[in-house]
Image 1 (tube, rainbow, N blue to C red):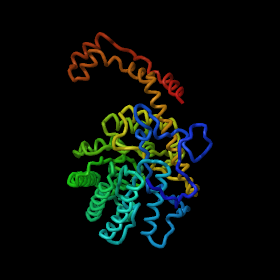
Image 2 (cartoon, rainbow, N blue to C red):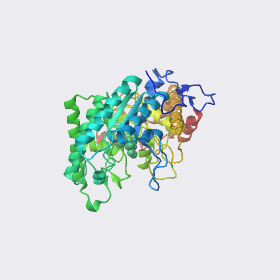
Image 3 (cartoon, rainbow, N blue to C red):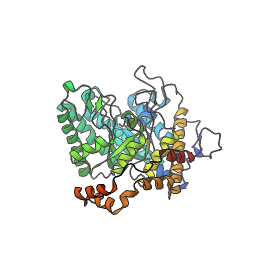
Image 4 (cartoon, rainbow, N blue to C red):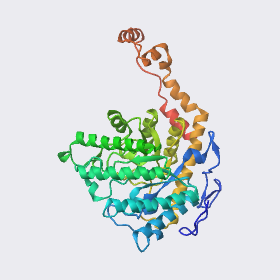
Length: 439
Ligand code: XUL
Ligand code: CO
């Protein structure tokens, strides 16, 4: 591994110093080689740095333009800036010790007036990324196409009322899958940023759904033609910027995938802040996905409970992270997925070193969460209470209903002789107390 020291000259490689350390540029809990539940922390957590927030974030919000000019963005032309930004990205990820990165096509190379020129510039940056992956050992968790920033996508991409826009989106997805494949990406994400509507007055919802499914089928066909074996993911989000987004939450994505014959080709990339926007907990979305063999990857961040929008803050809530890691561990862990910090610095965090503080905090939070979740599973008291709650289903009658063998008449006969008035305690308070005991 070679490493450059150009963009963060005052930061050394971040190392594990243990929970007594007072060094803010060290890990207190993330110890990559430490074994937890049969695997290293590195292999459990598969931390990923995202290009768009980490390298391209400017602190802009709906009320103000960017207020943070990172040194790698200062250049004579767009391609020089693109090269510098990618160098800075790999220096950052290497010093942080995260094994993965991820990107949108338009994060890494500029968009030009025509698609052929845009693709050529993208290829130049993919060559550069290939070299940097080779020299640093950093790998690509997933790639994606940005189908929401350019004005042409104002009415959606796969769901645009314009067939020309649909074709442009398809071409962009085609190329983005190809370059992800070329970089050895372990997956490819579809986030339907504007695949929804602002008003039903001008929206044919049924037709738009069919079009979106068609785009996804085309992507599956192209993936197969290329021989790309990475996992496809849909990243649910209920709204923002659209009033309603079709891939609303895990359950509605599941229904969409089933309806359109796509369920064998996709898993879900669950994002914490998207879950809360949908009125769910992060744990709910993960649990739904895991329970239906759809849990693929995670965008680890958090919202602000006092703000109703996608603030994409770094995850520092230990309890939330622990509930997430419980679901991940119980479902057997990540295979192609990982924990991607789809999170951005606050507007007032203007120093490049803040990127290190932010990611170190997120990594230590999830490392602690992993250890606590493992302890909860080893200890088994919560699992036992859950098991007892359903124990009546382990009876002959329960098994026969679950197997589809019991008739209405048998159930009626059973009800005649049991006449149940209440069920055993759900033990919620006890379970909450037990949970607190692990922190
Ligand atoms: C937007 C969001 C995206 C996706 C990738 O809310 O989460 O950045 O993760 O397109
Ligand atoms: Co995301």
